[in-house]
Image 1 (cartoon, rainbow, N blue to C red):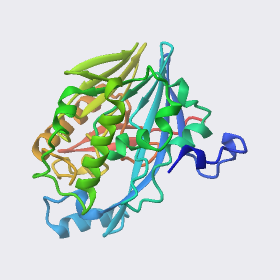
Image 2 (cartoon, rainbow, N blue to C red):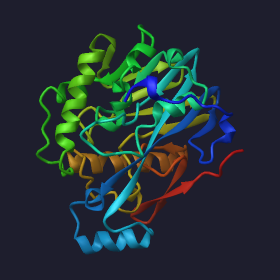
Image 3 (cartoon, rainbow, N blue to C red):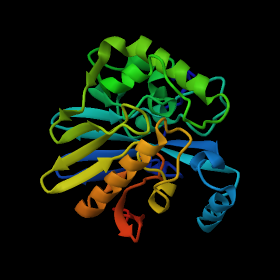
Image 4 (cartoon, rainbow, N blue to C red):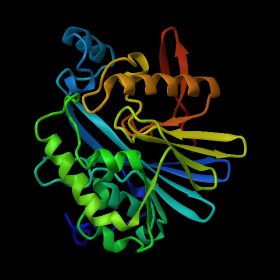
Length: 305
């Protein structure tokens, strides 16, 4: 895929039939949630540590198909203190995987009127290919600023030097694709990486914090301005994670730690009542977290027109 082949939008953004972005304000911080499309995955990946019948019953209760799921892919653009920050970069295109409905980031940034050259920083929650792949599209690097800063946890970079997938449960082809993407990413952008250890303030009110679990360097991004707050949770929370936070996702490299991180984060968000956005929740994914017995509930916010 090349940027040269991407059609530029002929009409206004409002001419889109299906919304692909959602704007909200966090105090003085501007936030835009953008859909990178959907990624089809086998349903067992959603919860591989439970009885198939139990998993099937949950899927049926949620009106979800039993075999293949459409996994939403959400990224976020943030403007704060004169900086324009892209949080995660979507899937891009891997020629060995047939994923025609994903990898839409470049087109949708263009449709939203966001010039790639205006992006000052990229924050990566982790280095799975559906979070870095958009940076690997042919011609993308040339469109970005030469002084672009890419923030990622040092533990994440270390992990991908020799990744251990022994506790993951991924579909065929994905482990190799993940390693290819991570290796190419570091090769292309190594000089622009800005590793952090545990926490780093990228811009006023925009703080990235390492949680671990999903991957060793998995991180969340916390936004705060005035009295407003919002958390972008990356892959710490999946749709099933509210009802069944102890179910293991197949892409988690430390499933038990990932479940602990998930529960701690959801408890915190339920207590603070701040909104949550996550990569794989249905677009635009903006919701609040409520406690429901021993589990949680995702309470979608009302769309603000």
